[in-house]
Image (cartoon, rainbow, N blue to C red):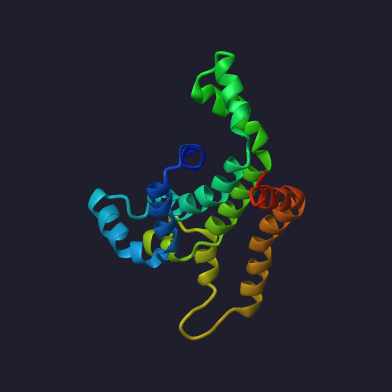
Length: 187
């Protein structure tokens, strides 16, 4: 909900400095945000809450969504939104009624890839979560102890957590391919 309007704004209004800032945020490794975020969340009392996990996953996923969607929005002709405005729609209404339906494959692609990145995110979860807010990758990590590794349980759990992502990828494969290639073609 935040990444789509940001990507549309960058694509339509040529906000190159904002695009460069988001690109830099995407290029910086997520681990560099870990200690400052932990300090902020500890000060606010948000360590071991779902709010801290959601905010950190959003911090990692938002620049990615913007960079997937910017080329896609650039490929949608401006004349379509201009026609909607001429017909009496506001800029927001034109975005919701015209641009979003046309950008369905891009939205599906960005959503799926963002979900997969968030599903597999281990680093923030190991630091900001505990037994009450444990994510699946951290739960699998508990199969490894100091003295031994429960290989059978570890492999079974790895298969079980891979299945939802695999099924999602198979079901939506055509949208992902269409979404990734549609934003790359201009004209």
